[in-house]
Amino acid sequence: MKKTILLLSCSMFLQQIIFAQEDETQEKKPFKEHLFTGGSVSLVFYNNTFLIGGNPVFGYTVGKWVDLGVVANFSYSSEHGTYGDYLHQTIYGGGVFTKIYPLRSIFLQAQLEHNFIKQKYFPYGTNTVEKANVDANSLLVGAGYTTGRFPGQSFFYFAILVDVLGQDHSPYLYNDPYRKNEIIPIVRTGIQIPLFQGKKNESD
Image (tube, rainbow, N blue to C red; front, side, top):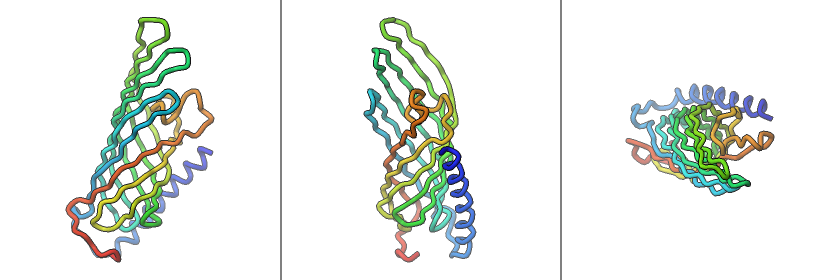
């Protein structure tokens, strides 16, 4: 399954190159009119776990079909175990992403991240705290829905991604060490805001 997803991810990057070449025939725009910002938020209550986080982005619209950008990750999670133990994680990091839009309202996404995780584990029935600082790479791939990607207009989006690398120290809600054989969906909702762009006609 993971090999299949990795192949799909590589296919997305190849499509990006093809679409970018096609867009070279279109009218050239000033660099700043291709820029956008925005980001997503995460709020999770699941399986005795609480998570809150944000993912600001800054990107560049290559053309009608492709966006490229950088993303920062900030989140905090707390997980309570079955036997009274619990784990706190503070996560920060960043990465790069590409989105391909076969339709104005549908996109495919690949996002390569590197995250740093500070952990505090509190065993049940003791006054001790076990601390660890770890880091890991993640490759998130998936798809999403938008309210409509039109030139010069902001839009909201909803995406479901999965981490296909599955490294041991990746964030807990990317890969639960106790559910290695399960695909854990990463749900994000956010907004994309164009910068320095006036409204264009829908046909642009």
